[in-house]
Image (cartoon, rainbow, N blue to C red; front, side, top):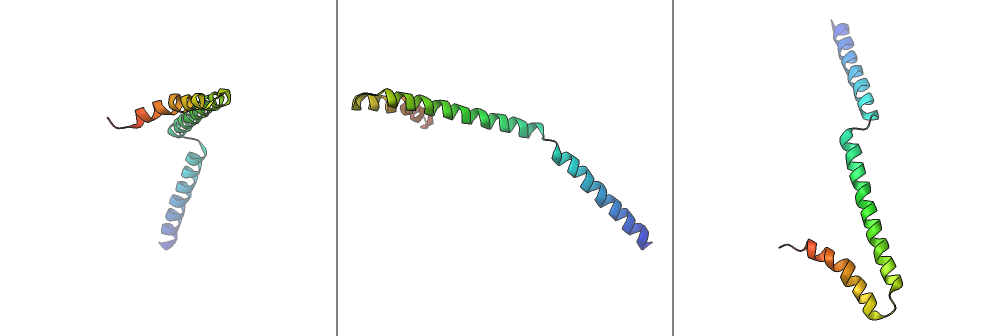
Length: 83
């Protein structure tokens, strides 16, 4: 009787290990979606930083530099502040 129980438990554990191994190897749709969204946010930040860099490089005086900061960062701060 102990042999049968051992075999049944062994088979169950083997089935669990094999089943989870296959499931873990295939990416889930939610992972793929989260990854795509994260990459999109990173691209948006890169674009924003490139815009800031271009503005600062084009600034010829302190007022122009100040305008870059106000124009590019000021809008973000207004959005982040609670209403």
